[in-house]
Length: 309
Image (cartoon, rainbow, N blue to C red; front, side, top):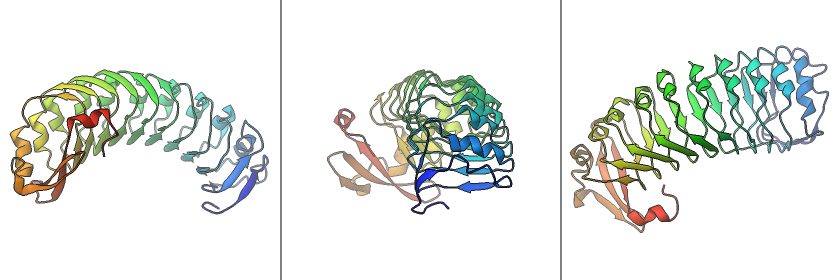
């Protein structure tokens, strides 16, 4: 039933007689809820075999009820993104012990991440970006040994990045950009050797960038722009042979561009200059495996203007 033009109210009794339902996909319709408490979710507690719940893209305009924790113990995937959901995240979601993915992106959620989320031992994807969440990133997330994707961008999280995140072995896509995070990056962060892409941009992180960034051998994308990092650019970045995209713009970095970067563009030779624009210069680069990439060098004054891309 997903991606149609259904409209009207989701019946409060939708789950009363569908006791064998294992998949409910109502995503991308024009559905609403009769009550602020999204009472139809309570009726779905009768569906003991439910594995998939998709509500993304409907204007539900409510709050998540505590009864969400009483949904099927078989539930593996919850998609409730871009639904104009407000209020806090119920702690009782942690009762859904078989949950693999929780997507609450693009709502109006407030409060903090429940520390009880540390009980979701099978969770692989946690998507909470572009809400109004605040507080610190709880250490309990470090208990999620299977966590692959952590999306927390566009909130108001503050404090430092938990050092225990570096003890996990599975994260590949941590996105913590556009928050209020401070302090230096924990040295353990560079232990995440399976990271493919990470975004820590638009925070207030500071201190030097460690040479240990070179440990991220399979990384393809790095965004550390718009922070307060200082010191030299680590030369070890030039050894990341799979790297396709990196932004260090709008920091306090100084010194020379490492010679290892010069390999990529023949030391920024004019022969490799593709374009000069109002934002900066674009050079043709070549990775060690022969793949050609574009490397943009931004003008300093861009940091006080619009966002870079």
